[in-house]
Image (tube, rainbow, N blue to C red; front, side, top):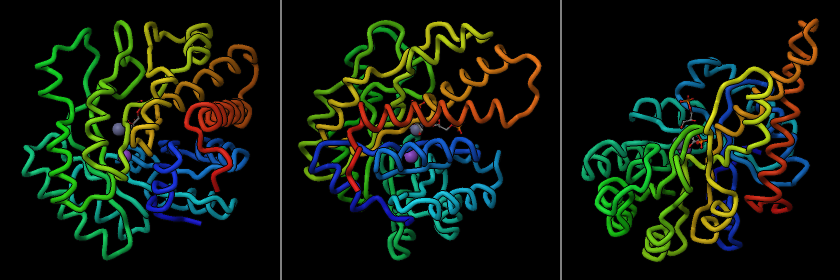
Length: 308
Ligand code: G3H
Ligand code: 13P
Ligand code: NA
Ligand code: ZN
């Protein structure tokens, strides 16, 4: 069934695992993720960005997710990723999403609170949960200074005040992750001391880690081997994701790893089969790669297997 993340986060928090929130925008990606979650018996969050809605058309996306829900008895959350204003959040709530993110992290603190509160006030009476964001995800920079961290990473005291004043259900925090395939130039580093402080000030409250792809080297290497050009791609080490899950992080956002799995498999297929022009063959390989990647992620990194 389609569910909110309320109970899923509660159990994840208590047991110290995290639930994968996977970005979806087409049928093969959805099918690959759902097959993996089915095999692993894991709860699942499927999330849709504004860009995905634009690419696939909201109606098609919604029907694809409904098909996934019909295809399994897993608890599935349908979540709007990075909603940038009230209007898109409202549209998704009215459209049957069970969870929305309002991302007003670029706004000053008080304005972020006000906009988040406005979304919460619309969502809660309709049974929908809300994720917000406080702090800015870092770009790729070496040895970010203490001052720079204080300016961009989530301030623990502000996080507590933000949650109290908005009534938000979960909070995305900035501790050194970033979106995309190039997260670190040198040695990967996250600010775990900050995460621990935030979590201590918000006991029992679910935190969200964006930019949490691990950028698996097997897919990067396959992309590069079969005609791609993505040198220096680097993600968050698996051990760090596991550690974050022990300190209140209940939702781990993954998009880049899906893109890499899909693209590497398609590149390999087209390289090995130059005479094939049946999209089902290469998209099928992409779907299989997505399924394998997500199975590994759920079983060996997030720890959400056999939790339903
Ligand atoms: O946070 C960004 C997600 O990876 C979605 O990316 O905006 O290109 O759909 P997108
Ligand atoms: P990645 O780019 O690390 O996959 O992060 C995705 C994300 O945070 C979506 O909101
Ligand atoms: Na999100
Ligand atoms: Zn994100």
